[in-house]
Image (spheres, rainbow, N blue to C red):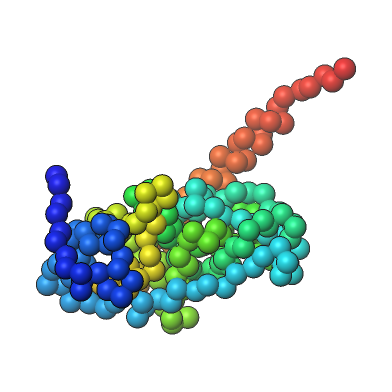
Length: 228
């Protein structure tokens, strides 16, 4: 279905942005959220930008997540940590209980909760991620934001993110889009229960992940190699 939006020169703003995606009516959050009352996402969570590079690295080991390691709420661990010199480009630093969402190709649903059971993440290593991620952190240390995972993966929010991406070859969502997202009061009322549910679901996933990993190791050990 074709979408048409007419804008005057004054609507283009001081930078005269000519990207047609900027004016897509389907990214109008106020219209999509309808009459729901709630709280802006950035009143609940902060977008943090703490980074590390090979030059500033101090930890012995680093577990690096790229965008392929986050999908449908869960982080799939890269399993192998690297040394400071292998960090490569600048990375964002993650903490347990953060929520990450990729700004690149939002239709891939690369949203995840940072749990404390990620394989390969230990006390002597730092968990870092690609700068393609927005890192959300609770403004209240006593309140989990795990409930934001199903919120960010919900149909309405996904439609806004998809319509808000700009760029042809590598379509991205800007940080300003996050400021348009409204968390309905109905979800806020049950945020604790939803957060607990998200954490429990991920914990179950980790148990399955561990079981499969152990079975693979057992299978490996069953082979006898005669090296000549």
